[in-house]
Image (cartoon, each protein chain N blue to C red):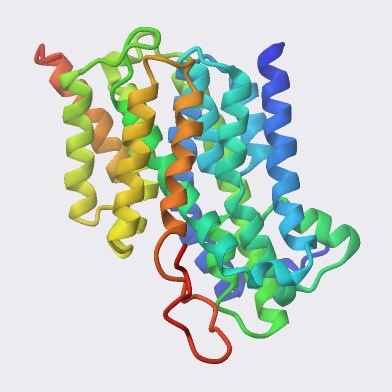
Length: 105
Length: 243
């Protein structure tokens, strides 16, 4: 039940953020600081999400999972080779699964 | 729908939209997988894809749920990530020029991809066509693949055996990569700081909160010389941007 409230709040909030942009006075766009901040926030958040999810352990602890890190490393290689998004994700999961199958991590 | 199907299907905007839709569909599969792995039901996963309809925010919320973290922090993190859509909306408002109900419906479709496909158009008619085609095709792919991904994962007993715990980080990496590749040193500093702040705070704070704290790293983007995205009137002075 509580989870549903979070889902509805996220959906409503995301919609309002989009609508606010379409309906806001145009001069807001001319503020270069606002523009720069709005475009750099996702960079900080995405990097934080990668780090936290890659090193997620039990509860709040950080943990090194060699198989998972190997999968993420494989994803980096795929990105460097300019592989499409689907390939990157599949490579990460497959490499992790293969490493675990071999008894790594 | 009042769209004339035959001519609509022949348009370049639709073909471009389908190409993009296939890529987005891959992310939808990954999202359905990540959502069910985190403990959401397939119905809850599809609800998010249908109504929140902005990938990064959805993945962020689901990541916090997976970590058993504070839902409030999860929602706030999702909204912070969704705030860039406000900026897209600001830029799209003039070229689309919709009012009232049409604007309210179109708002739902303001995301990275629709903005990228619409903003290059200079005339209103083709901008509207590009926006509508991208929105409709992407929305259909996104929701359908979320459903498929979540239903398939619902049948998987051992998530870690399939390496599905690497899907979340790989998705975020795929979203961040183009920004790192095309960005300057400042972008990389912000990314490193964001990751560092989140990792340092993880053992101390409930899941979700460390990622929120990491947003403060974006303040680095405000340091240094004034942004050059908007041409300044008159001469740029040396003092500009100094404390």
